[in-house]
Image (cartoon, rainbow, N blue to C red; front, top):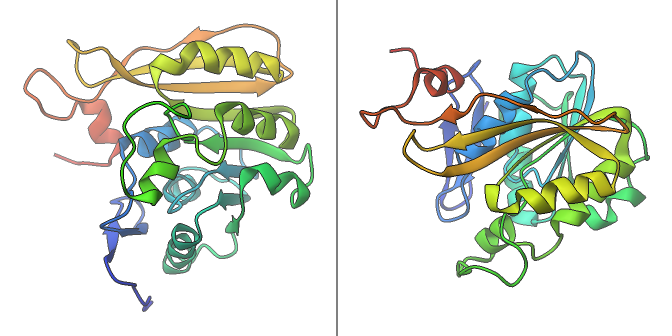
Length: 248
């Protein structure tokens, strides 16, 4: 299928079930956090209706279409240019019947989507608290990395409103926000159930956290084994190779 690419756009092969993604070389490209989240959420139940808050170029939703037997996934993306790229990726992968996308701020999405209707929500929200950190001059990167249009509280509150009772919530974030994350999840009745820390290697501090919560569930938190990206030789670990489908 021929897709017309805009300036600086490229097609990247995801090395999984022939899926591809369109990215802008000068914009904010997806990172390992999105790939790890899609793998963390691969147990989403068959025929689930899923929501991807802040879908960006659609990397998480695209991978979940390949990794799970979900019925439908809807991506929400506030940036028009990124939304247009995601639409082209959907067409490129022939996912029009499974992956829909809406160009909207998540703060307004309750007006377009019915409450209590989603079986699962995935999100890779901006990590940096509003007013903190050095901001990149590229607006697309600022919106992707900093809480400029919506806060952590907003992402979790919207998830609570849209999830069914006992619906699943999956998120990737930074360890330095862990106390905030757990506090806000409890505030909105999304009980933290599973957490996994991601390290660059065994000598480093954790760089990412993967969290699963369930709406209106009873308290019980399972901490999974640490996930290491690199081994002592600076090469990808066996688990990371499996996640990336690297056969060597």
